[in-house]
Length: 279
Ligand code: NAD
Image 1 (cartoon, protein in one colour):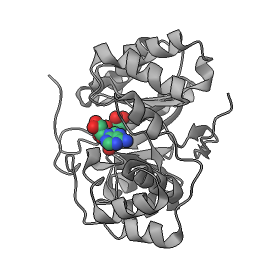
Image 2 (cartoon, rainbow, N blue to C red):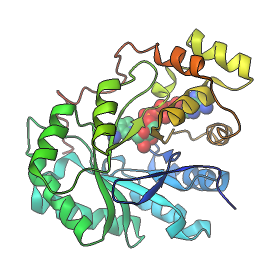
Image 3 (cartoon, protein in one colour):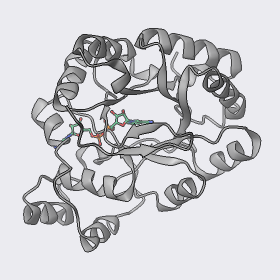
């Protein structure tokens, strides 16, 4: 099956499907089924994390799917409990083993945790696994501009992505622009703000006039901005709905109207203050 999903080329030449499937808050005992549904719907990019507790089940769904594993792009992330060089190397080994794919396509520092650890030291471990070819690309998540500036000044490899909360109520224009200037692709987490933007009259108005759902309109807005997205759902109809984004295009005024909804409103934690470390 040829995929309708365009690829974004990362700064080291590795292509990533611009649309994927996220498994945050998918319980491990529902993950094989959810990922199987997504793969059957055509998704070829899965976003997981050590802290989601479902890496093993993501690998299992891929193994059971009958799809060539090298056709599926898998991202995982370092747990907040394993910052620092040796701990991060050992954590990568465990992620690689749990996924069971023989490689990790993209491995991220999940949170900078700047008040507790030195993410520069942690980044050296990611540079090591990238140098060894075990991670095809490495990146960061929840990094603010200051964190990126410090990383760029003090390390060898420019992160391939910065995965940040981003949706019409938090458009992240300055951080997205900084990334674009430095070859760092923005990945938008909570792309529909966990549903919070779907009742907005601007979104529902465009959806009605286009005969699309509000989720499709918001996801399409992300794609046209150049963001990589991986909406999450365990409802098969929504999983398929969120994939049907490639047979319509928003106009420039529609794009501008959605972008104008920005009010710098987070649904998740602020990276400058987030210090949660799993016990
Ligand atoms: P999301 O914006 O994708 O929203 C998910 C929720 O929206 C679902 O639980 C469902 O209730 C609802 N939904 C999904 N599709 C819908 C549809 N078509 N119509 C109506 N409602 C719908 O939020 P998310 O799960 O927080 O984010 C997506 C992914 O981003 C995660 O699964 C994870 O992979 C990643 N993420 C990363 C971080 C990070 O710190 N790096 C944090 C949060 C999420």
